[in-house]
Length: 147
Image 1 (cartoon, one colour):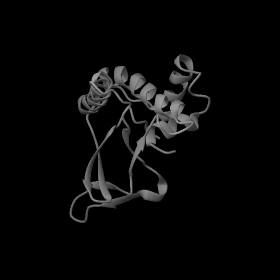
Image 2 (cartoon, helix red, strand yellow):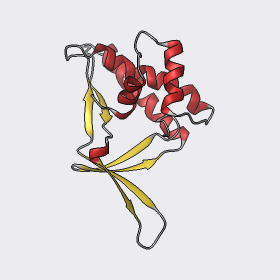
Image 3 (cartoon, rainbow, N blue to C red):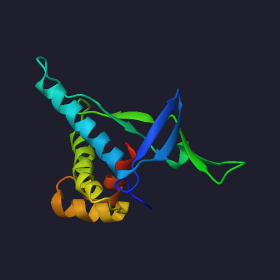
């Protein structure tokens, strides 16, 4: 299974339905940069607060693949997929940090325009951030926005 680092997704929202498309590495890096800048802006504002981190929740139950009738193009649709990761919930601190650690690890990989699987990403994170990642499931949840 291809990890988020290799095929970050862009989402076009239509109320409760999203069309997920594969982004080039430069656009994925730009989205990480925007998330970091937004977080820093919130922290350095006159009234600092830890903001919610918006995520896309990708699960088997909310994913559908549609194949084009007249073309060979396929689309991945996600329904009810928007969620947030927050520091304000009890016991959510590590999950919040895990998302940032995944982005931190993915950014240099995206700079090299390489791809990694979720499993490879887990082993890389285990080497650098073992206090936050004790199982591959935690990496998958951070990538896919699952709680």
